[in-house]
Structure formats: C-alpha cells, structure tokens
Length: 212
Image (cartoon, one colour):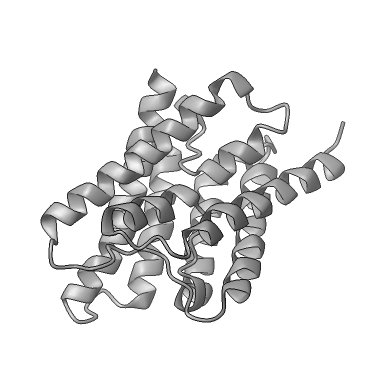
C-alpha cells in the first residue's frame, strides 16, 4: 500500500502543479508564461522522484509503469495497482482544480494544435526520449542519484518546445484526468496510445543495449 499511496500522491502533485500552472496562466492572462508552465512540470516531476523514488520508483505515469513491466526491473504483480493509483491521483487533482477554477473550460487538457497524426508521432518520440532517460539513468548505479534531475530536465525541455503543438503530455494519466473532468475527450486516445508506444520502444531499446 505504501507503493500505491506514493504513486497516488506523486501523480496528484504532477497534475495539480502542472495543469494548475496552465489553468492559472490562462486566468491571469499569461502571467505564468509558457516557459513557466514547462519549468513547473519539470520541477514537480524532479521533486516527486526524489520524494518517492525509494518507495515506489516514482513512476507517476502509466506509460512508464507499463514500459517497466516488460523488463526484469519491475514486479508485474504491482502493475494494476500502480495504474489505478496513478489514475486516481490524477483525477483527484483535476477535480480539486475544477473546484478552485470552475470557470475554466479545459483544466489544462491536452489538445492537438495541428493534425492528429502530427501529435501522435510527436508524442511517441517525446515519450521515447523521456523513458529512455528514465530507464538508462535510473538503472545505472554510477548516475542513478541524478535520476530526478535528468528526468525533470527532459520533461521541462520537451514541454518547452513541443507543448505548443501537442501539449507535451508523455503521460496518459496527465491527459486522462483533465479530459474526463472537463469533458474534452475527443482526442484523448492519442494521449493514451502514443505515450505507451513510445515508452515501450524505449524499454525495448534498453533491453537491447544493456550490459548483461
């Protein structure tokens, strides 16, 4: 249960702070700014990794958990519990934001700025790079202590340049929660399927390249 609680709190924090930055940027006419939103996502991910990494691994992302589940570094018996905890934490965060900002229409939901296939491909690539950093850094004992910094930096970097086009989700829970609570679910399938594909490809890459 400690693992599941850590994933619940960690994902709650990610969605509350990250999408909260988007909402507050909207209601304050851009005070937070796009770079501010990107930095917020990166910093909260980094903070949660250092907070809960020793308890649950701080996946806080269903795509990451699914990708780890095809490796020997994660016990598959925890898979459903992790996914449920992440989704519940994310939905709880979006529900709180809805109570705080009832006038906001999307609650930071991810919506493609261009075509669906453009966003689909971008989200696969973005999540591939993210998972690649997560698994290669966290599983390398010589640099594992820097996992939080590395992963947070990648999240912030990718949100900075790809956010205006895709929303830079890279995380099904981050997209599912605001979409469900705000009822903007039309393109949600993109943000569920693409990150999972990208993360799985990264795990496959690690399995091919890791030292035996």
